[in-house]
Amino acid sequence: MPRYHFHLQEDNRLLEDEVGLEVSDEASARGQAMQAACATARDLFVNSEGQRLVLDLRKNGGSPVVKIIISLVVEEP
View: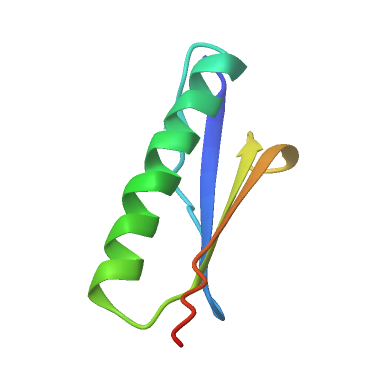
C-alpha cells in the first residue's frame, strides 16, 4: 500500500509528517486528509489565536496529491 504524508502548517508553524500513513488508495487518503484538516482546524481556531491551516497531502513523501487550506476570518463591528 502507498504511504501518504500529512504535512500541516498552522499560521507560520510547519509540522512535517515524517512517518506517514499507509492508505489503500488516493481517494481514501483524500478523505483522511479532509477529516484531519477539519479536526485540526477546529482545535486550532477554538483553542488559540490561529487563523489559517494548510494540510499538504503527499504520496510517498514527495508527489503532491492535494492541498487543503482552511482560513478563519472574524469580523467585529
